[in-house]
Each structure stands twice: as C-alpha cells, then as structure tokens.
Length: 405
Image (cartoon, rainbow, N blue to C red; front, side, top):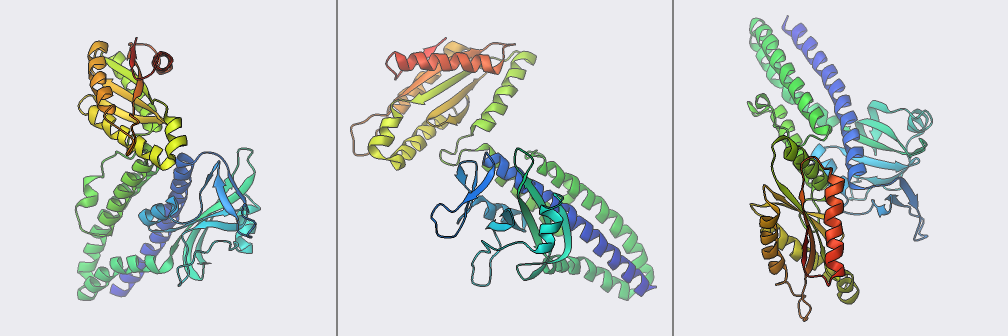
C-alpha cells in the first residue's frame, strides 16, 4: 500500500508540475512580451549596421540587444532563460555557455521552425535541448502590425531545477510513508488538499500580476509556511515591484513617467466629479534646455534634468505629484487645492528651481509654468490643452514665469 500510494502520488505530482511549468512558461512568455511592448514601442527588426556580420536587433527606434539589457533583469526575476529570435536567429538571449558567452547568432532547430515559424502557432516542449541543456521550453511567434511573423520569443527552464523542486516535495512524503501506510494516507489527503488550494491561489495571484495589476496584495495563505510556494509568491511580488518601476517610473529622473501620469489624471478627473475635490494641473518646461545640450553636452543636460526633477519632487511633497511629461517637460498635479493656493505654492517651487546653476558656469536654470484648475465635468484633454496654452504664453512672454488661467 505504501509503494502504491507513493508511486501514484509522485506520478500525479510530476504530471501536475509539468502542467504548471507549461502554464508558468506560457504566462512568462506573455509577461516578457508585455514588458517589451510597454517599455519599447514599435516593431521588431534587425540590421547589420556595422557590416561586421552580426545583426543588431531593434524595437522601433531603440536597440534592444547587447549587454545589460532589460531581458537579464526580467529573466532573473522569473528564474528562467529568455530568447528573442529575429526570423529563426537568436539575437537577444540570457543563455550563456560555460565561458559566459551568450548564444547570440545561433539558430533554432528545424523542429521549432516547422512547429512555430511555419504554422504560426505557439508550442510547448517538455523535453528539449536548449543550448545543450535538457529543458522545458515554450516558443511563441512574434507578429508585426500586418500579422506577418517576424520572429519568436522563447522561454525555458532546465529540467534539473524542476526536478530539485520535485525532490523537495516528494522527500517528506516518502519518509512519512516509510513510517506507516495509515499515516501516509491521512497526510496525503490533507497535504494535497491544502497544497492544491495554495497552488490555485498562487496561480490566481501570478495571473493577476501578469495582467498588469502590480499593486495587488499577496494572499495571506501563501505566506503561512516557509516553503517553495511562499518563495515563489515572494518572487512574484518582487517581480511586480520591479516591473512597476520599469513601467511607471522614468529611469533618468526617478519621477513617475507619462504612463503613470495619464492614469493619475484620469483618477483625479473621476474624483473631481464624484467627490467634488479640487485639483490643479501644471505643465512646465525648462527654459533654453536645447542650448544647454548644445553648449555643454547631453551628459550635462541629463544632470540638469535630474536636479530639476529633485527640486520638483521635493516641492510637491504633501501637495501632489510630479512626473516627467516628456523631454524637458514636467507635469505637476496639485491635489485638493484652489487655483490661487496652487499658484503660491508653485511660486515657491519656481524660486527653488532658480537656485540651480550649471556647474562652473554663470548660467542659471529657470522654468516656465502653465497652471490651470481642473473643472468638474471637463475632459483631461481640455485641461491639458489649457495648461499647455498657458505654458506657451509664458514662454512667449519671456519665460521664467507662471501663467495661471
């Protein structure tokens, strides 16, 4: 009876694990494509710009392959290997040989070409060699805006890592079963029921994260025991924070980015209608920023952006948020403020920005501001257009000032 129970349990757990690995790899492939589509805009394409026989891969106008790319952080968080193919050639990957060389330029197998590129269907392999390592792998075609297949994304996980996890689960069962067949029957029923419930909760939690809801709280049941499920769930939580940082924050200034600001603007529009709260919106611009870049170089321009962002962030503490709107433009949202109060607070921020000087020069940094109030019932486009019009008037009238209407 003990042998039968152990055999059946282990077999079922292996089947469940294989199915879960397939679900996880499918979800991880979707997550990776979501991150790349969010962080980079445009279609995938490649060219040999240096005529050195090695293709450089782009997404839109930005090159995405090379060292220290986003794919490494994402693969580390998900504990998998990720590859992106242009046609059938691997141009972006985390796969490395024993010397640390990436598998860039290698081709997919004939089987994968026939199963994925020719049919246009995603394919899961439970036993495949990925760069000489037996692995679970999932391949998904990448299509351009015309629906044509331009390449594919592959995510893989070594069978050895899955076996180690399996060993962690099966060893306690095996030891208990050796003690008594009766006890194992009771423990198996109880353990599997609880395990299945937690796996289901973990699956729902991870699916929610993969849908972009990064602020969701981890179910309490997943952290009750110090086991693999808790570690996987905590890894998912860390992954969500990392992806949220990538998606909602500007890397240079560490302010919220435009994607976050657009979401915030829609939130305050709804609150202004439902709760009657007052908000003021300001679009600001660094004066003569192009001259700073042209005269002192882009590194100095980046330093100016960081210093200005720090002043805006500090000045908006307790008042609202500051976000990078694009280039040298910033968006300020004053929460629960009338227009005259917001203008007085903005004047303090403007004076603080004037304390910024380009190092070793006599050039002072100033900004122009277009401030307006969000009226209940009006659209975000209307208030942004009015703030932008005020900013234009401020720059036309000599810059270094606030226009408030």
